[in-house]
Length: 390
Ligand SMILES: Cc1cc2nc3c(=O)[nH]c(=O)nc-3n(C[C@H](O)[C@H](O)[C@H](O)COP(=O)(O)OP(=O)(O)OC[C@H]3O[C@@H](n4cnc5c(N)ncnc54)[C@H](O)[C@@H]3O)c2cc1C
Image (cartoon, rainbow, N blue to C red; front, side):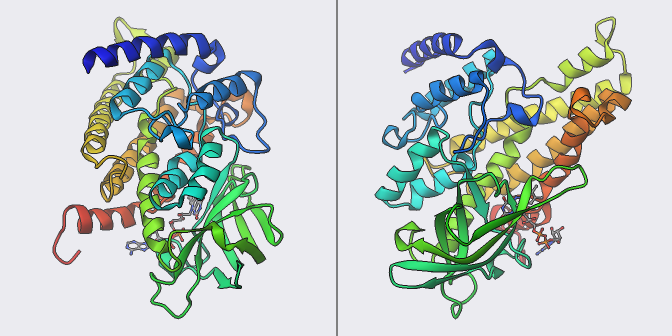
């Protein structure tokens, strides 16, 4: 087994060396460095080549089965691939709600036709997905959602509104929670629908933030006809799929602080502040950075352990709330420290000065998106610690 893994490691290293160009080995520094894919993606030549090379091998989703566009790799081989990519400083070829959220849900709940239609296109970055969960009046209390999908024989007629839909104006398709049975208790009348954002009746209105960016939208559905075959799972049982998808979303958001393809805090600090002998010149920051890096290291190990203990292909369940809570606190702390390291230079706002201030402000949203910290602490109390009365 170890010998087979050693061979795999050597082959993987050689392949990455040959296919990951120098440009794709530099840290991700700004939004345009992140590849989201999709019909309207505008990629540099290097980004396109890297995405096609990795997508062609199924290595954008190494653990997914090969018949659905994945690499068909075991957990061990997936870890080897990740560690070789980290060693090379290789960027992730594709960031995708399809990979992080919808894919795992389809693998568990989708029928064969849905898997064959959607998963390979997600793996190759051809279709960009957005998430239609939150509504005005249904955020933490998501099961109060009111967007309706009326059964019209061969299709559903969808009407309603979503809010905070990240990148809805750039997405090709949406995975969407809708109410198919208004008479049922609120968790039971919900269904999980997939549809094309170019369907007649879908419109988006970007929400402009104080930073000038518009990362999310209000999304409106006005008599949108969605073919019946686009319903995932059983009508009225969408809440189970929604919750399962959220565990994957939370695990992904929690892993943000340990995401590869970027410099460590100490590397940035040494480059920016310089050394005093062999140690960082700023003693106060030195201890804060060391504490953060130890916490991040321990968190990385915890994440590995939790994933190892998870049942194959089933994800980490309620423990994702723990990973999300702690991981997002760590990421916020990392961004605070980067601001301290950068000093007044870190306040630069335009592209010529870098994006640190924006990244710091953006990190404040980490403990809201995908379920707030309070909601995740409630889940930890109830499902992980099984506290009485929680
Ligand atoms: C950057 C970002 C991107 C997002 N992207 C998407 C997206 O793509 N798709 C999507 O569908 N949604 C998205 N969201 C929405 C996100 O899921 C919601 O903002 C989140 O679930 C909280 O809902 P809310 O904003 O309605 O706040 P509310 O639910 O109104 O909560 C307000 C406050 O009350 C607290 N609170 C509420 N209930 C409880 C309780 N029972 N116990 C203790 N405290 C409680 C909350 O913790 C929070 O502090 C995004 C949000 C952000 C910030």
